[in-house]
Image 1 (cartoon, rainbow, N blue to C red):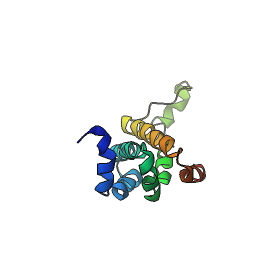
Image 2 (spheres, rainbow, N blue to C red):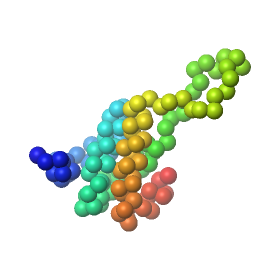
Image 3 (spheres, helix red, strand yellow):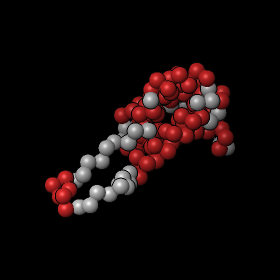
Image 4 (cartoon, rainbow, N blue to C red):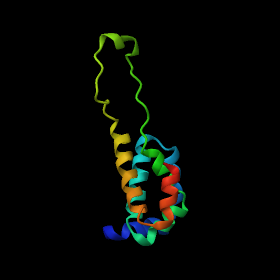
Length: 121
């Protein structure tokens, strides 16, 4: 199959509900890859309505807010200088954020999605 046929093939296989479920409840890696698949499907204007109807917007928006990283050495806070730079995100969470942002960007070109994007985030 050609690369440009992949989004249509995924829709034919009815994977959107599973992708939305993975983006919501999966492991960090599963969420990252589910968001990537949703981004791939949403790039096609003809497929945006299906992604929207599957309920993908809220899970994608929620992926844009990374979990707070607790200071593992909270007891030693006084001895350490405060860093102005946040610690790096785990790779899977970073990828999930990038993919979710890309999917939301694509979906923002579909007028019916815009209001839900705003309300979700």
